[in-house]
Length: 377
DNA sequence: CGTGGTATAAATGGCCATCA
DNA sequence: TGATGGCCATTTATACCACG
Image (tube, rainbow, N blue to C red):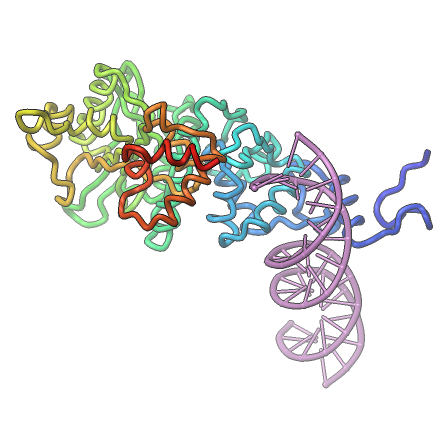
């Protein structure tokens, strides 16, 4: 059987349409260069490259995220472009998590496709499912900040990026260069200007993108770093309480990094249990301080987060994507109030229509609500 | 060598059938 | 029920070419 492609199909076999021809061309042009020239069946748009870039930086992304942050909110377009890139071998898709919808992550070819000189070379890695919620929350938080801060020249550097930078065996030279490339102020342009200094590990190597712990014997990696106004702000997304000694060690590391002029501020986006660990909680006899007060990173007593310029800021994590809202709330809710994604969405609709002032989780916790909801179907 | 018009490629968004 | 692939009509981007 002879093989035919695209417009060369023999008369009468399959009617050749532009769509079929383009598909045949897509099949014939796969790999890192796919979509860069005519006759490839599709053309890589700036939005496509942005999606590849985001997926590479954060390791994984949902199609809904892609739609929101790359394709002006049009899901249909995002799905189609993802399909093209998956067909070209640049992206891999996974639909193992119902609440996430389709998750996309870059292939080796996808990473090669957007490799830019001067930027860290990322390794290929299949994202593990167990950490997927955390990974997607990090991506969402970072993308939201990037979308808001892009106009003001904010840049976001992901954990994958700085792990690649700090892996280099060059005494921190490429990490330093990259810091300058993304706008970190490493030298004062005017006298007295605040300058960023790196931390140092126990070998004396400067660490621009990692936080040395235990006198530099170990390194801690923030979830991502925001570069703005020439300074570094570390962001931590914590949805599981760490053991006290581990969290303590991380906070000590950050405290040192802040004091030596490396990190300007740490933002903690956390679930209620972690928030309690960090800033304390109201007890029977007044406020019980958390780790931040104990370590002098916050004045004793209930925190006032309207005060600006604190070295550490804690705020409740707020998922935007409906699937992430679900997955996150399932960890916070007591077992009896958990439900399948499908059921949760039905309950959400009931909540929306109920006109209550309570937020969803609080509404669900009102005695009788769950029993009532379960009786509906 | 620039300009403007035309042909063609590709993007987009809507719709539908299928599938799990 | 949502994700998906197939298809179509319309819009937009790009390549090409003749002309001055």
